[in-house]
Image (cartoon, rainbow, N blue to C red):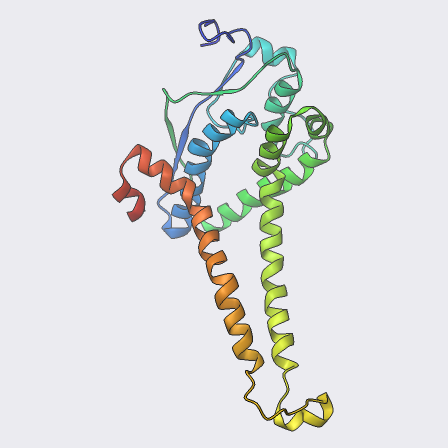
Length: 252
């Protein structure tokens, strides 16, 4: 694969990415975490490679050892700044330019069983999010933001810090939405507070704040919730559909 020049880019293929399946049988939490790892190691890696923003994530990638030694190795030494050490191999590789791309091939499929209990999943995702936060302040991320084209830069953003930033916004928006709902409900005009709130009774039937907020949430946020659930589960469904069948994907 590294020596082939049939595709015209044999001299620049130094990292060959391979798909990986993660399995776990520790309850529903392990199943959900393993499903997320399957989607990330297969269809998402394939998409990132096409869009030009795939890096190295510790998955079973094949590398040119001599080339990796010349660029400083695979990992970095600083345990705080380079917490997600594997990705810096792909970042340094991409920064060298000269048409180098990371290919994702499908002729090998590797599987790995992992202990995905609740504490393990929590610690694993805490490491990933912390490593992504430290990755943003590195010189590699700064230089990639200056050299990558817009589609590649947007893909690199979404695949790394953009995902966790979106999760942060989702986590913050839910308490704010509930707080806004309660604020509107508590400020409603009631019979015992007409004088205090200076509410004018026009004599016509008026909907309460609870009814207005219920209609607002039902019309605006119901389809957003469905869209959010579909968007998060769509990569796994499509991957299982391609590998097995549509019935297996829907049952999973």
